[in-house]
Amino acid sequence: MLAECSLSVLTGDADLPKKVAMIRKTGMVIYQRGYLRSLVPFCGVFLCRNDEGNRILREMEPPRHDIWDPDHPERGMNKKVEAEYMAFIRRCIKQLISVDESKVISIPDLNRFLPDDDDSDETTFDGNESATKEETPDRSPLPEKIPGRKVDPRQRQMQPDNARPEEEQEETESRDGEGSGGGPGESTSETTGGGGSGGGGRGQGNAGPEAGGKGGAHSKPAVPVRYRTFATAPERGIYTLVVSGQLERSQNVNLIVSTVGDDQKAPAEISAAHLPNGVPVPLVSSDTLGPILLDKNSVYRAELALAHPIRVSMEVSAHEA
Image (tube, rainbow, N blue to C red; front, side):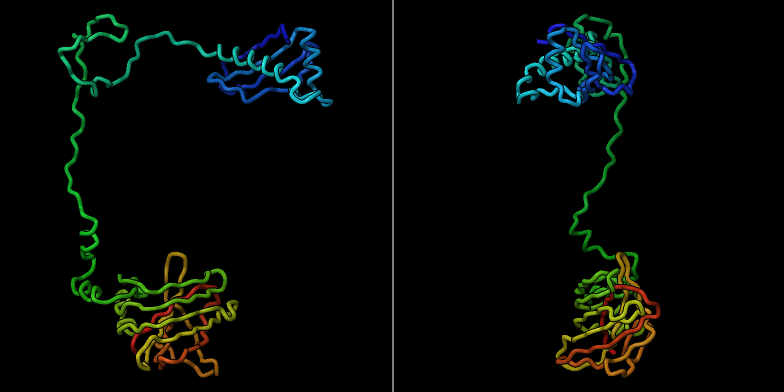
């Protein structure tokens, strides 16, 4: 339909945009056609030199004259015209790829991985017998595999921690829990509540008695408790602690409070604590409340004031007083 058309192409620069300027005979650039696949960077100019072809292309232009629309002036009316000039452009672009007529490809060190068969005829890839018999290929051996031994994952888990003294290992293995000092064990505590939203948290505490080697309240046997902490006035560092014991009888305990961050835990710095009626709660240390009589049928509630007004989540463990 378009008859006489031409495509002028420029190559050689790696930054060329792979686009073709679409031009009618009048010299007017209608638009730039992109998304043309080619291994060779290029830019080009498509020109229709035929009067009838230019009339058809002119009818495909909307009032803005910024594209050749195959659905203008009617839907699907000029799809064949678009297919014709796009096929012509693609044929021209395909010719940009040079054809490599060489038959011999040299691959370095390939002879190290090919079998050494003296009975077979050694010829080049082009079929001509050559002086390959006279070649002395480099067949240096590959590095030998370093011998090793396999470790059963189950055995690795059962191996003791050699970094700890023997007496401490034996003492830790017989108890469950995780101390605030990082001692190993099986933790039964779970906390919820964001550190940045006021430090609310709840869970079940059962910390190990060693507590990473600390003495004092941490070295006493652990007592299973359920607890919940939430911020009452975080701008002043005021938090509320609610604890209930899972006990068979009433018992005096020390409550150890830790602040919990994204990847670490630290002892809480408590400046003061009191009951809801205002009675002060004794402090063993900056992170330990006690001794406190914990009844199996009641809930213990206290208000804590931190030394620094920060928003944190808290973890609580209990030990015999």
